[in-house]
Image (cartoon, rainbow, N blue to C red; front, side):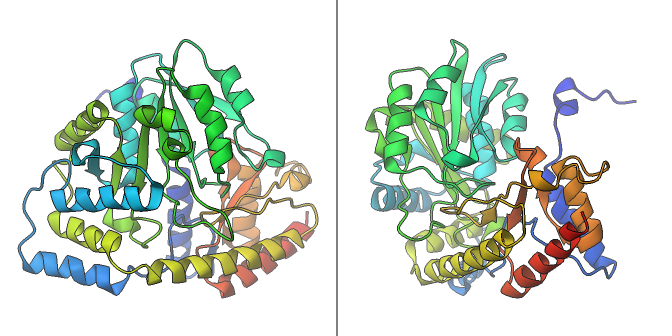
Length: 394
């Protein structure tokens, strides 16, 4: 029998992908399941972007590409970062990756040695801890509170830093809570981190999906003293409905970016040229489609939140961005002996109400459940009705 490494044994499958797959399997069997588990827009990729990919194919863009990405795309990313974020980067400070997930993974591989600690505010995206452990690092979780809208404070950060701390992951807007840091809050965190040998991984993949008067800010802009410590992570998956296209990028200090790019070369060589051409169109073309999607997401957020808060016992802050609600469901835990965790409650909702969600256990918040409102208003209305009736039975 082939021996499985300790590293592989420690790795868990993605809980969000697993629940989405379960819902899809049930639907394939003819079971009427409404899925709130999927973390991706339900819109089609805009036509102009699809046409750019087709044009790239017709031009023969099917050969190997530079590991760091084609120069035209990196130039467009640099222009985007300057225009939207007020951050100036040279092309050799930007690398293209197979999704933002690979950018984060590679940044950790570059910065972390065995035993190094990585601070992760909780709740967190499910992949962060596993990616840290794959780099032989040690995740250090800081539990945030719903009263502070699931955001880390400077005082909490200061207390968590040890001589072994080598990195921190900041996700704003956040998956799973939708919370986002203001420029003032990021400045406070940056002041704690400035001057320390700690890499800041700033996951900004939901940057374009913020609502109302909220303004997204990168920590590298809010606290310029941290720019040389920060690796900005972003991509086209969420804002442009391009999750399956697998293009992300990292921008940061040249020595770090060069090593991230070298890893990309060893892992995948580089993402296809016609996809990079499509991403170039996404970043340089009109923004009407982004605004339209964002406005629809805000309408859905408000509708789902109103219906959810009408259910007795559920508590949920208003998210600033992304497309998730992360209610506290502790009022329903233990109502039955067999339903004493959010994972078991999520299973109950799947079996009883035929709605798919993702339990908060996977996000480091066992008293919560994540709901994605990246689905139709019809599904939101019917799904919340089903959940209300199921919870009444408890």
